[in-house]
Structures are given as structure tokens and as C-alpha cells.
Length: 203
Image 1 (cartoon, rainbow, N blue to C red):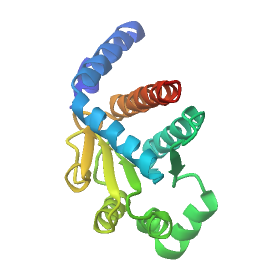
Image 2: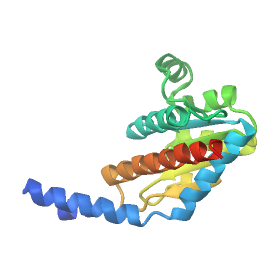
Image 3: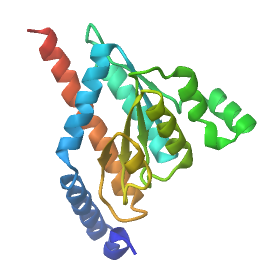
């Protein structure tokens, strides 16, 4: 039984209060230094004109798209904007790879085609145990691509394989708070970088 099961209440108002309070606690337990390091990785990618790629499954695929959108468009007023791509967004490529080679390779084959040394690969997963993400991260590590994971629960294997990790500590199967927190990290990072780039160019 996880925390959401424990505080579940048929009273919608009480459940809502419990849920919001719990998500607030989860967010407070995120290591801010790991967010800082992630931003430094993105700034380095911008300086090197490298590309940042996002991958994820299910709800985390949606977060990958959202993250890529916010970083690419939210910071594109810069003279040297971040180059950001979500590898979950081309249905033809995704389904072709899944059909011909299996779902295990839907990201790995794209990473092998697109990613170059000094690019950044960001894998988002609540469980941290999605094999198609892990294989992509392992390949990226061996190819000189900087790897970042956004995880939750206990971090799974992804937490150990990625070179850098922002971990959202929750109990198992708490997908809601995990994905809520990942989106907050998205908006935090985009909000900072947008203003950082504006200040940089106004000097």
C-alpha cells in the first residue's frame, strides 16, 4: 500500500487536500543541486550547439514532448537557442521501428541515427526500469553522449545508469505525484532558462 492508498478518502475535498499536501512534500524532497546540475548541462549544450533529446513511455512520453516544447519554444528568443527534440513525437517512425524490430528499440534506433557526441539524452521514467530507455542510455554513455534521467519511486536501474539523475522520491506506483513533479521540474527549468537567456543578451 502506497501513500495515496493510505490517505484515500471518499470525501473528495479531504482527498484533494491530502493529495495536494503530499505532492508538496514530494517536491520539497527533490535535491535542488541535481536540478542545478541539469541546468548546467543544458547551458553547456547550448554553448556547444549540441542537441538535447527527450524520451519516455506513456505519461512520461507526454512529459518528454512537453519538456521539449517548452525548452525549444520557450527559449527560442535567444540568438543561440537550445536545440531540443522529443523522440516520442513521430508516430510513423515509432510504429515502424516497433513493427519491424520490436518496441524495445523504438528509442535506441533513433538515438543511433540522430545523436552525436556531446549531445544530451534525457530519459524520463517514474519506475526507472523501462528497458527501451535503459538500452538507449547505455548506448549513449558509450558514444560520448551526456545522459540525464528523471526518475521516481526508488529510481530503478535508470538512476544508476544515467550519468546524472534528478530523482523524485515517492513510494512505488505513485504515478500521479511522480509525473506532477516531473512537470514542475520542466516548468522550473524552462522558466529559469528563459530569463537567464534574456538577461544574458540584455547585458
